Image (cartoon, rainbow, N blue to C red):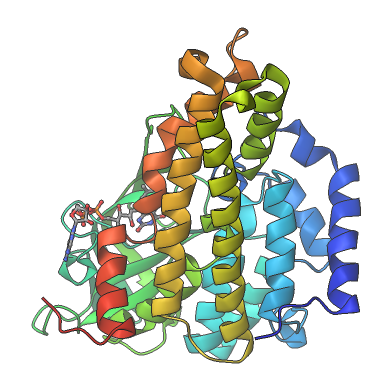
Length: 385
Ligand SMILES: Cc1cc2nc3c(=O)[nH]c(=O)nc-3n(C[C@H](O)[C@H](O)[C@H](O)COP(=O)(O)OP(=O)(O)OC[C@H]3O[C@@H](n4cnc5c(N)ncnc54)[C@H](O)[C@@H]3O)c2cc1C
């Protein structure tokens, strides 16, 4: 695989850098980390949409750029490196759009893809339930066909952006008699439909980008069914590969890492040879992780689906993100316990935020244990336990 950027890709990267240096949104955040999940700014997303940087790989008839996944990776990498607030369009651009292109109806594509490109619509993803996370096939939210509608009842949890989204990309049971991984369908549920209640959940950092969503006999027109009735589980498996394999799994903390290394240099902490070795070790691993993510984008650009490759990249990169948060705390020292915004905290208390947020990296989008199962079965051909 040839990763050398073409002159056009170099130009794309420079355009992004120029834009990000002049746009007020990246600098306007209280912290620069986790912009894809903790930075929600519709106006900024709209400005990106105007430049053609959302839906970059999609067909032009839907407003897309018809460019490669490697080009898209360049865009996402530059945005996250700059700490840009990209959450408002992230799910739509990363997974809902590709899912509609793969399985949606013409009507759904025509209605929603141009809106995603303009950042005029935001999605949440309703998969996890209190009794079904890793074991998604165990979900119990029901969608019962009734005339031209489905009637949805049940509960989702950990639903990111549930309070902001116009649509929930819901995974629900449509055939309770079938085997668990059959009889599941994907349905887009308008979040303003009567019968939906959202209850935000604060995380350890004190932010609450996710929440519980309760569906009480919510009527959803059947035209919002995505793909084939009762075959949603297989469609989702594909969608999860898109979700797992992006650069957001590696550089969520990159702005803080850069500032922490500069701090170590300033304070003389790098005189400690062990710390120096560890910093260099992280830098090496960052290069390796980046190579894995570029490889996944290369596979997508060739029209193939990365499954175990996406899992390998996510396990390696998110474990590295946790190591980075730990080393940042060591560089900052005991003051790394001071909360975000504390006057006396070095780096504005971002080290404490990074430490508290870090456990989520290896849970969201599939836990390391589940991903290792995928690697062993689909990648190495080992038998299922
Ligand atoms: C920040 C964040 C954002 C999230 N956003 C969303 C969202 O937008 N939408 C959404 O639907 N969900 C979301 N989630 C939920 C996430 O997908 C689930 O937390 C995750 O899939 C794990 O499910 P669970 O929490 O039910 O844990 P469980 O599945 O109960 O797992 C508990 C533990 O058991 C282990 N385990 C389970 N099964 C096996 C097995 N077969 N083999 C080995 N070990 C196993 C797991 O690895 C884990 O360590 C989010 C989570 C986080 C942290």
